Length: 509
Image (cartoon, rainbow, N blue to C red; front, top):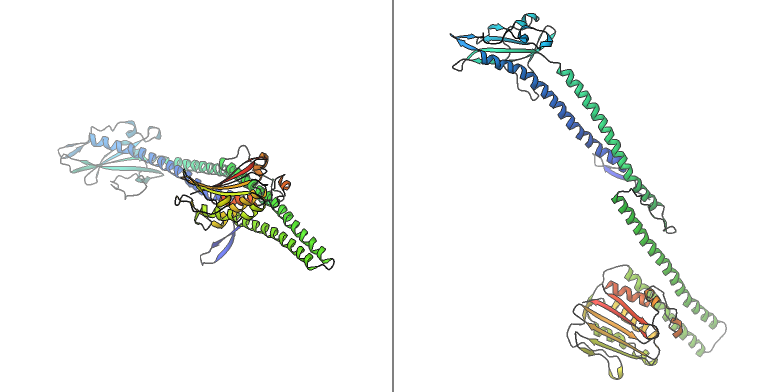
């Protein structure tokens, strides 16, 4: 089952269960506000830029007119001479909007009105004839200095008129009708808000489409993972041609995982089937002998013969169980407790334990050790195996788990003796700069070329194994392969039918 809920901590420290949000919802809630904020910033900047442009244009008109007055004003006999100023221009004589009238007033240093443009006469009598405030309090947002006269609004600026000594000789006050910029700013603001809303909605729709495009293949992956069972492992995730690279990688990775799982499950099924067969056969034989022995009274010699037969069968049965336990331990992948081992001593001891069996089958069993360029015989008199430490120091020493390596050598020698009749089995230990090699060469029946790739499979026995009376569970070479792999080594096989087989174990030093 999929865990679709999570927990969150409240302010009082308690926890509660909450529904996990979908990818689409999480993307909308995370990306949506960010997009809205990102779009709002340029909209606000555009509106602020328009506001500043209107304010700057309006002020620049009256400031320019005030500068012109300051340029034309003269001080004659201690009095202001304003005759040089262009009082007769249309925007000083008329008050109609089409000429954009500008209203100019000049005051002395005491604030008394000295002269004003003639268009002021056409205005409401409430138009001020006094000097207005020179300065406005500082504000973060710039604004116009305004006043009202009748039903009209005006903005203005006041500039001091200096004399030759830099003293204030008077003031010029320039006024102008407040332009209709507020309505324009409102219209611009409404337009920007509408554009912001439209773009935000459009981008959210695009984000939702992208989220759906990503989540749809993921949902198909989830559906496959949810419905697949051990009985239906051949189902795979379909990767659309237009899928994103990450989605395709996820789908292909899951398909590769399913391939490995199916391979392991198939191997497990084969292993279970073979194991059941291999364990059932000796148990059935044992039960048959017991039933025969119990049908009538028998002599002590007959009972002893039956018990010896049972003991032999039980020995094979126990060997199969031990092999299965060894493979299980290797398959678990637990770390190995290794130690430094002299492979010459280890191999010689294991080979020595097969000497009696080799003599009974009239097979010559020998073991030798070879250093860098020099051979060292490790065989006893009459070709019988005997252990001897290599004279060239630590050349044959490797870091291994000794019990497992003994199992590997034992299985190779047992296999060689099992499929060799009257020939020879030669075991050698070789060392070079990087590796130690264990060779087991026999003159037995050999292995067909097409079977070499199969011999490491569990419970596999060659087609001609029964021709020489070779009995076994078919687990020996599987154990050897797994032991060598766990020691980061490799197992090589060379065989010719009717001439013999050579196994070579290579272990890193």
